[in-house]
Length: 336
Image 1 (tube, rainbow, N blue to C red):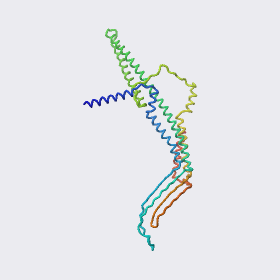
Image 2 (image 1 turned 90 degrees about the horizontal axis):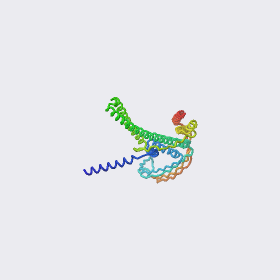
Image 3 (image 1 turned 60 degrees about the vertical axis):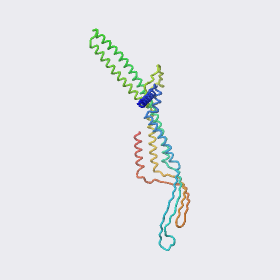
């Protein structure tokens, strides 16, 4: 029994510490810092960007040499039967054979791989723009939710003041009715106003809770106290103070438009890459190998070394390239 009570006390103390730790007073900057680390949507964009960055080394790997090493060892059993007058050639024999082979291939001309390397740059730029757009969206969401909390807190304060005021009016109406200075309808009207104020206060409390919960969805932590705005706020005027200049600037620097342009560039390079599937490829190939085998007539050892150029010409691929080109051209039309 004592152990059970001790465990309960420890759990209560632990929960109290956790709640006290999370319920801190926060300003707009600290809330944004939490959201930047914990917002699922923003973290997803970061992960996507990291994955896209890896497309460049993957594309570069197709232009770098590849080295392969293989080895083998085998146990051979032969049963030889010959016709004729050969003496000593028939019978069973067991022997070992082994060897290895080292081959190196260096791409010399692969048009599609060079285009893929260029395409990786446009994909990374598109991902960078999308990440910047996600950060902008996060800033806007944090500001909206933060000021929604401040607004709901102000509305709750007004609702409490109104309840207090109407409570006083209801009390005065009851006193006037008791001494015969007013009718019962005045009391009922004051009671209705007071009940309405109570309902509005409850609604304001719910609004505050909902606003704080929206902040928790961004930050991953529940924040109970929020720092309000200062007494004086420096408002910076836009420069220049004309809508046309800002409209043109938005067209030139809009992140959605920039991302779409990079996506268009990626799609165009994809068409070039698939078209390069019709072109031949040239590789430098080199290999060295060793084989050793036995037999009835003695063992044999072979060392071989080869270096040269290898040409591959695609002649027919079952309409695969034409089908891919058709899809990519449709995507280009969609972007336009």
